[in-house]
Image (cartoon, rainbow, N blue to C red; front, side, top):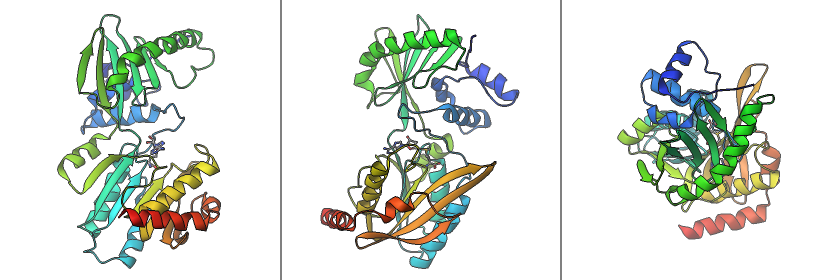
Length: 335
Ligand SMILES: C[S@@+](CC[C@H](N)C(=O)[O-])C[C@H]1O[C@@H](n2cnc3c(N)ncnc32)[C@H](O)[C@@H]1O
């Protein structure tokens, strides 16, 4: 009837030694993430469990896009000399690890390039009450994601499992309380210091960037992050935009995906490349299904594909050429 969770580092270490961690894990443990093996395993375990209130997950993992990177590099080498400073963006980058892997091969072939990994958020905000030992975790848009009251760790953005009656009751109560705590947290959502005390609540932030990518950001100026929504055009045109596992029909309507595709179009310079794709898994076979598009006047033209291409080709083909041409001119005027 009860499902307890993991809220202490020592518990995580004990569970990890025994194999896969199957219990809910407190997101605030992300403050112990590091480049070391335990810190890295902890980070990846939390990210696997993390689902945003929008329903979008942040799942990603190392070496998942080796074939995509090879395909893209082959196209780039055909079109550009090594001295060309390619400006590349990886939209909806999640923990930025796959972006960093792409940056590594890109910088090797095109040393003057830059890669910007962007997402709508790279942090969570935690509010902890030391006297009651309660903790609420919020997205930085203010939506509550998790409630921790040892020994319970309760997701708030998705239902408690069936038959876990105590979890269901605690979760319902926590949702009511989360609204009040959200008011305390609100002023700190966008610009939260490492940690700050406000009355009974200690507010702190934890990073959603993979520790390996975080270390790379500190030492490699060509690799950057930015907060950006896939529905907004960039303020200046770039050479390449990758959108992996974001323009999915399970997340967005066809109209929204078309809006996102138009934002990509506006953000690319003429001849720029869009890498659109999705990772599929069927009968344990994992595949990256990707299409590489080139920005032509008023349309996207397919230039390469992997494993049959992306599954939004019909939406891309149906984009209104007049709208895209106007979008192209608008983007041009901004420069
Ligand atoms: C499944 S992950 C994809 C990660 C990575 N691209 C990959 O394929 O490994 C989806 C990501 O999209 C981000 N996201 C959701 N809505 C977004 C939006 N409107 N703009 C930018 N990123 C968004 C989420 O925060 C999450 O990190």
